[in-house]
Image (cartoon, rainbow, N blue to C red; front, side, top):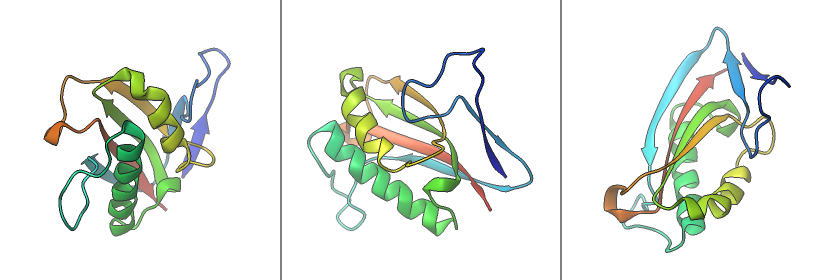
Length: 128
């Protein structure tokens, strides 16, 4: 269902993402952007982008699970950062959730995110 697409005729991925992901015959789960909120208190977790990214990824994992998916099923993500200088720190945390065949990804800097957090991530997953 999920096949990593790689060509030497385009630039190789420079981080934990794939050039493209091909999906055939599958249901799709579209996960809204997650920010680093504690689900019980609804308070922001973490002061650094790396700390916030961990909470975002944990939240994303719970939404994936609720939709009968897991990180291995994710085919595309978008990371929104308020400061591109946080890219390396966020990338390190993000990479730990995708041990192999990471999804396609875009990372963009935005001027502001809800509750003035530093990172937000959305995802698309295919169900097996």
